[in-house]
Length: 72
Length: 327
Image (cartoon, rainbow over all chains, first blue to last red; front, side, top):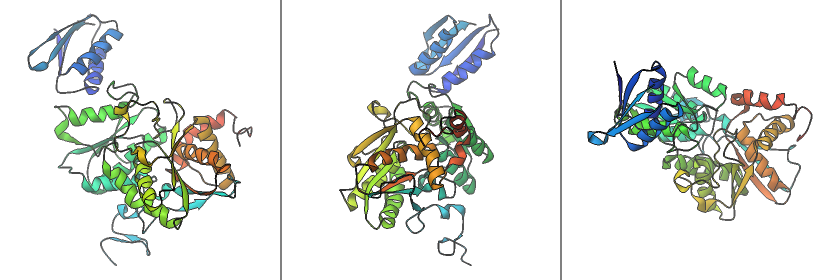
């Protein structure tokens, strides 16, 4: 089952900190989605995923939210 | 016995915050006799450790908390330790929960003190937040008070932008120094940090006598081991504390970690005053003035040595000081 974590209520760096903990908690090969609510959070969370060598796709949803989808 | 207020003569207080220094109950001013051999340039230390929670920050926290509209929220603040300790003590006395975001590089002693006081501690890597480069703790608190999910639960005194930080020194520390030196002060030395001390004291002293020189002290590099100090030179405008008033500052002196720690240890061994490394940095700058200037200088000593024993241990372990170099 795909894990989803909605961080749209948090701005950076809380969004990044929570995303990092979430990513760490996932198992290898596990698919997940992180929702963030601002561009700064999108940038820092995407950077965090990239630094771990995780390829990420993102799309802009309604209400200025961004959805990052990835497989660990 | 009086049940309310403060009686400084009898030293009787209705609560602990009554001990925070003020012109009627100033922190001591002590002349340095052995570390400074220059008779024409007298240096006095303003020992802020004699505040009830142990540092200069007791003054500003008392002032800020008096006016903070808490409304049942948790008080949160970034701190390199001293503001956090004062905040935890005063919040405890008021029955208010407190969370402190600290840089991960502060001494363990300060973290232990904050835990001892019951504050929730959040350690933040300096590089945590791109919006606050090299100040992750500030970024974290900013996010707590602004995030939609958390903002209703937190309130921050925000010492970097709160004019009460300046006012505490303008109405307290400045007048104390003026009275204690009987208006004869010629030089005032303080560190750049939140910049409340240098702005508040500087403004007050300049109003009494515009000829008084106000000297700001900063670390020689942005990456340093002087908790509470900030390198202002080269900092982008948006990261300079908003309460800093450059117009009161006559000169800026850079100090290395090595000079700061060596001077602090030298002060303890020559004059018997155990101070924190920031005092060492500020005093080092004052001593550099001593050879070529005349008059009375006051150096702010923000806190004592006891919260930095692990940092001092590292310096002492190098053998540099033991060997007598720099002493």
